[in-house]
Length: 71
Image (cartoon, rainbow, N blue to C red):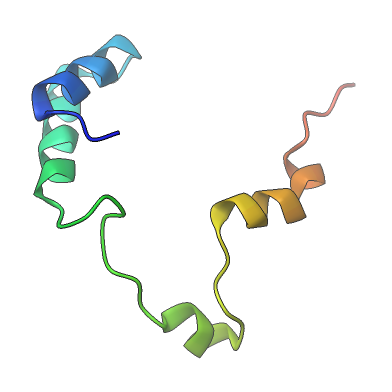
């Protein structure tokens, strides 16, 4: 969702982010050329030899590592 800077900053403050940082972060996000904060590059594949994958796929593949453990 693309929010105006003021609305995004207000939301961040409501969830506990200090106001000066929330405003700076919202302004920085608005300055980006696209919603992904940058362009896609071939770097992951160049370094690892594997195609990059989505965060959703990574989390799904490693769900057990992120599962809440009970004692």
